[in-house]
Length: 219
Image (tube, rainbow, N blue to C red; front, side):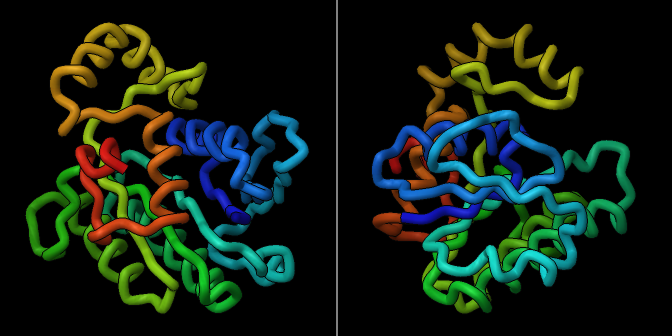
């Protein structure tokens, strides 16, 4: 299986990249990034790209892939609705519409979050925009599309958040996160499980298109 990965330098993306490179069934990984991952591996290739709304310059390098793991995402904290929509909906759909045209047999996996509003009518701005993004991705003619909605995520194996205060919070709460993962698996997953589940779902499918934390852990 040949995989395209977006968001490889983020916390979730780091975990997914690790699992892809560990899986012998993954033939190659193409990471589309703004800055280098710093990793070297025989099956990893990186494209440094600065315009995530326009892929015309690199389109020829995006064809021939079986799966896309889209792990780009930002917090809505302190952000206007217009800005959050641009960084969440516009960027995701620009990539997805390009990839589905180039790879109609592709499986597309998108990381959203627990509480995403599929009705697009709720009071939470981020949840409405995530809901619209999910809904419009599911309308595209991919072979299949899956929405991953984790609640809490425990970073493992040296995975770090690029945001300093978030990383500090993860370090401070590491024992609690580990406990919650054991006693409340419906509300916690790990970066390792996220990566392994994405690979499994892309390879074998899943009975439903939206996966909550318990589905991710099960997969």
